[in-house]
Length: 153
Ligand code: ZN
Image 1 (cartoon, rainbow, N blue to C red):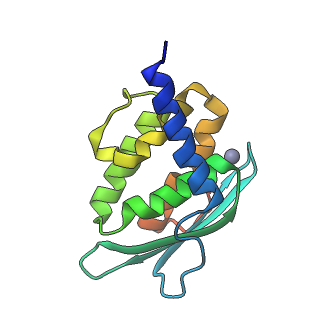
Image 2 (cartoon, protein in one colour):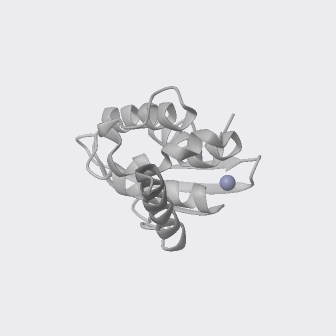
């Protein structure tokens, strides 16, 4: 018997692999007006996130550089795609929803997360949750301009 759940898990894994092998928006951004660093000591993932936020408070562009595992790289790649055109408030809302999904606080299937649903399975692997959320901690630091290196707790 074919399990529909297995098919979905395969699709999710494929999206994560694709984004880890060919990350989108990877590179420094000269015109960035926000940036923050992130570090996940558990896995060794490092990340620097760049944002260009325009005068009406919307994220016009996002990019990242870093050195991390497949999950952290794919998460940063999908984050930069998901952010484009969002207001800061929407971005902070997305951070909350993403963290709730991967930590298992909410059931998977939040429509606001769209493609980011591929990380729903991470909840079953507590050590990987920090890999998946690193880019999101870093995003929060960049938006709120804390100027510190974001660390997964
Ligand atoms: Zn990692």
